[in-house]
Picture 1 (cartoon, rainbow, N blue to C red):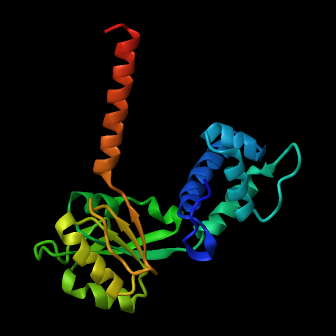
Picture 2 (picture 1 turned 180 degrees about the horizontal axis):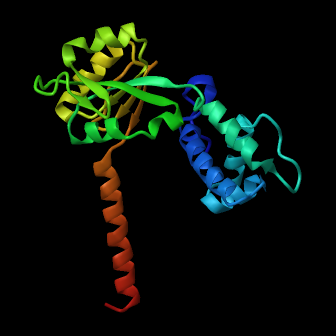
Length: 224
């Protein structure tokens, strides 16, 4: 089935989700000393459709792969990083300085992927003016104004579900065009805003279902 293309430049959401997977895989293969790699090998190792992998790589690679040898691994890594903007740092704000929010604020690995969380906001006055991971927590009344003044385009939502839509609306009012949402709720946004949901409840349910099904299959195999 052909993927629906609805993002900037006609690039599908699924393609954008796969590119970081390729990047992580290629970095690992590069660390193992691999010099060249082909699309069929990538597809086989990642258990993906070979035709789709070829299309994805053709979209980002600045040079075509060679017959038999394929692509130079280091060059393909650079091409993906350039395409995804890993070499450009986009500033982001986080809203909701609870346990999850503080963990994200303390994580230093985001800048590797071109994102720097510069500050956080929280509705609890007791948390205002505190620092977490060297990032200042500010009161919510400053949200829209600071986002506009600092030209912030990425917002991270780590508030409870009943507050998430209001926070989302305020981020959009402040000029944010990309939202990473950790709240377990669907957010309504304008067409020009992209939302990436990280629903941990759904992920855990999927893992639980997988274990249930595999245990049931094992029980059948054992004649239980």
